[in-house]
Length: 304
Image (cartoon, rainbow, N blue to C red; front, side, top):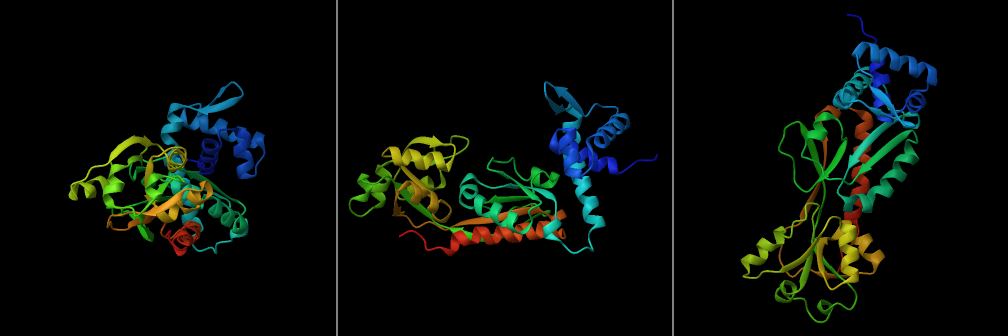
C-alpha cells in the first residue's frame, strides 16, 4: 500500500487551522494545492474531514477522533528527521500549547509570550488556563507544557521543580483584620472565599484549622483567582492564596496582604511534559524559557 506521508502534514495543518486557506498559509503552499491535498485525504480516508457550515468549516466526527494522533505522528516525524539539525530560532515555526493555572498564566503569560516572540517570531503559543483531566492530554500530545502543584507519578511524564510558594492572606483596605495582630482565632472567625473551578467550599487549610480545634466559615467559592481577588476587594471576604504568583494581581488591585497565622509547608510548583519531548530541541528551548520566566516570580521579595 503506497501512502504519501506529506498528506499527514497537510491533514495536521487542516485540523489545526480549520480551513484550507489557513492550512495553506501555515505550510506555505497555495490554496488550490491545499484543496487538492484535502481531496486526496478525503479519498484515502473515505471521510469528508472538513465540512462547510455557513462561512466556516468544521471537522467531522472522525477528524476529531484522529486529530491528536495525527498531530503526534507529524511531530514524531519532524523530530526523527531533524534530530541532528541545529535549532534555528529565527526560522522556527511551531505551535505550542501551554496549560497553566489561571494565576500563573496571569502572572507570567505576558512575559513568556514576549520572550518567545523576541527569540522565535514564527512560534505561536496557545496559553490555556483551563483545568485538565490528569495527564492524558500530555500523553496524547495535546498539551506541550503544564503546571502542577504536585509531582506526577506516571513514569512517562517528566517534571522539574521551578519554585516553592507560601500561602498569604489578602483583604480589602480597611478590613477589620488589618486592625491589630492577626491571630489564628481572628482568621478562623472571618468569612472566607475559596478558589475552586469545581466550587469546593473546603481547602487543605481547613484540615490544619481542625487540628487547632477551629473551623472557618467559607461563604463562597470563586472559579478563578482573578474573580476571588476582585470579590475580596469589594467585600469583607478573606481569600488565602499563594503569595508569589498572585503578588502582581494583588498590588494592582490595591489589596492588603497579611501573613497567614498558621505554620504550613510551602506550596511547590512543577512544570510537566511528556518524555517524547526529552530530545526535542525546540521543546527544550521552550521549557527552559518558561522555567526562567516563572522563576523570576520567586526571586522577588515575598510580601511582608
